[in-house]
Image (cartoon, rainbow, N blue to C red; front, side, top):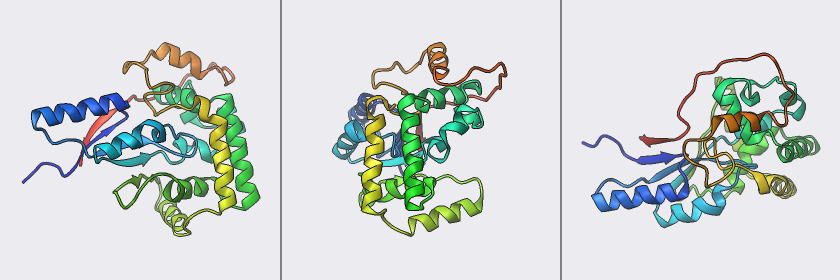
Length: 237
């Protein structure tokens, strides 16, 4: 009896995924069949480099962070006022990472447009994100691609299921969401570990990350600590 059904990778660069596959083939190891990556309406870099490669190696894509870590559920004002700890660069490593990934002028502009779409069409911001990833992205459920959803309460999970039960978004909404992507496309990061470039070293310069995270937020004298965790990983399920 085997120890796992599927061997998966998460937050690796495309070249690293290919290297793992090649090593597995050369050594006779079980190759990875799942890649778990950051993917949402304002984080679509995987479409450019990951999806073609994953199809080549018969790997499926599990999309995490459909709400961009909650960014798409917030407002620019909430984030700038430090009301969202996850996007506060003073909030330990997690705050530094998410702030550097999303707290940029282009992303704040996109967030305001996202809110405008929500108000115009009477859809909640989280609902738009979940339905877009589920029905309007390149994810192919027939191949095994999936979206990872998160909820802290049972009621939230029920709400997400209800949203998904509505099916695809109206065509006009989808068109406007495409415009939101165009706003951030030029400087969108890849994932929570490879923030700004496919060429980043796997051991990031946290001092540089910290400084970048503060560029678009007001300074504060309050410091909060947060436990750290690995931002890349290998999973066996």
